[in-house]
Length: 140
Image (tube, rainbow, N blue to C red; front, side, top):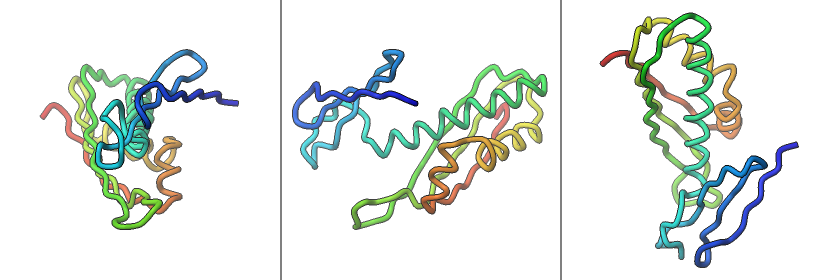
């Protein structure tokens, strides 16, 4: 079982979430809805989780294929359902940028495997109806 603790620590909506290992993330809402920009918005955390989950998968897959990744970055853009509550993610665009001695085709396959087979965050979003578009850039 996973244990997370969330405490209000700043203003009305500023929270700190901690996992069982003491790792912390600050969470808040926008100033337009009463927050103070103390932390990340909860829905943005989902996209951050997607980036982290897929990044771990991709680098692990490429490492097993003896590809040398010296730098890795993911850029993520998302669109949500307009004008309704709750507002789910409808589409997410990801750009994976890798540097190093990496074969482009192997990198593409690693990204595909992550997003379609291994990444639990991607599958969670997919089951909620979210569509993914992605591309891979190697040494560009």
